[in-house]
Image 1 (cartoon, helix red, strand yellow):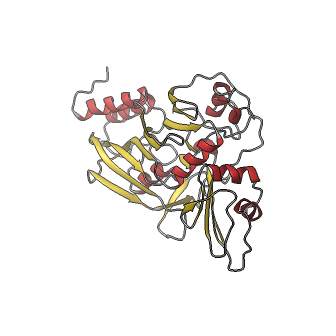
Image 2 (cartoon, helix red, strand yellow; image 1 turned 180 degrees about the vertical axis):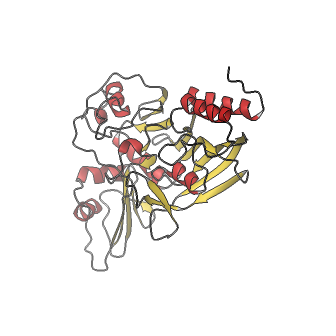
Image 3 (tube, one colour; image 1 turned 60 degrees about the vertical axis):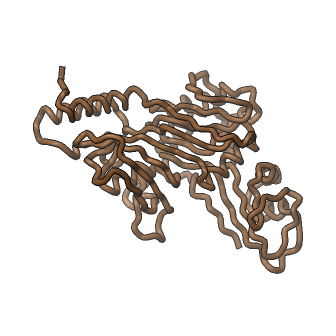
Length: 355
């Protein structure tokens, strides 16, 4: 019996608009009673389509092949009724991507990984219409002497991503073992990820949790939607708390329990509090406030100050793949969101002036 969990890259959503998606594959096998005892690397190579022995061995080296709850080596002999789970970083794609000398904001770097603060407007990895100017183009240049980044692959070292118009933190692995161990942390949900968002409306409570399966919209294939039928979409959970209230909008901190495509944006649209200036999910319209012309002008000015959805990947925490040390990073709010918050703060306290 095989259960393949591979929801994170299926080529259907434009990659530049993927919100928070992990780049790994998970397979689970329950071994038959009549299975002969063979090496697990051979067993998995036979069972998983188009996977190389090297990828299987790299996963084992990272501790990502688990049998009956315990990590095993490639030489482990598969036994009848074994329960096998394997997590692998997503395989490379055969597209020749060119290194580009694009400046990077690097929060941390060592021999195993680096942590990048991505600006809004930068696509994470190349896709149709965006084969240059991406984070991967920049990484291929910055890490041109690192073997993992010398092949011109589309997603070297990446185990998660944020979308083009979301700013904030990403971790990038420099070698296969680190990449697989980080991938396992995202799969097991042991990473810590917090976002800051400005949403429309005055939130009804000070904190809460949004639960709702997320899948592709039945009306617009470039969007995602929440499904009330548990048989549709994929399990998704977003925890949130109010940071500050500004009357017609609210500043919230979001903590991801899962990492589905467009998760935060879709969940807040679902509860009728779309993210400010989110053109895909309806936040680029005046949804709360008065009918006065000066208020309309104020909001239009806010849209110009922050000409993208007001969402920032503020913190990322994970265990270092080699040292085992807990790592926590924080990205300051970018200028556009900071200015937007300050403008709403002045408006809500009566201190706003159009001059």
